[in-house]
Image (cartoon, rainbow, N blue to C red; front, side, top):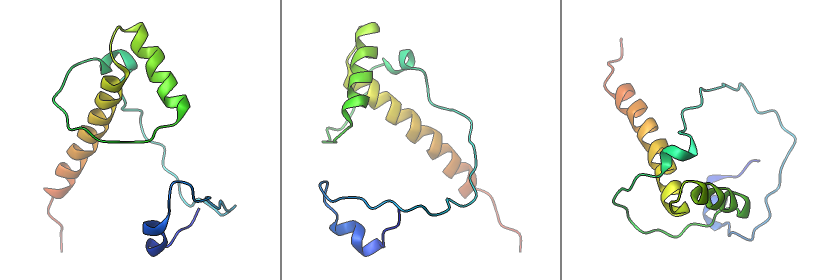
Length: 101
C-alpha cells in the first residue's frame, strides 16, 4: 500500500484503500514482547480518547475480560501502555548513544 504524505491527511475512514502487489523489502522478525491477556488487568490513571477498533479485537478483549473478571477497556489500555513503554525504552537507549565520526 503506498500513499503520499499529502494524501494521508485527506483520507477519511470510509475511503477505500488500494492494495498493490509490490515487494515488502527486507523484513525483520522481532521477539514477541506483548504481555499475555491476564497481565493486562491492573489499574492505571488514564486520559479519555475515542478510537475505532475492529469488531474482532473488541470481541476478543471482552471475552478475555470476562475470564479474568475485569473490564475490556482496561485490558486494551494496559496493552497500549506495555507497547509504549517497550518502545520508549528503545528510543531512550538509542538516543543516549554517541556517534563516532
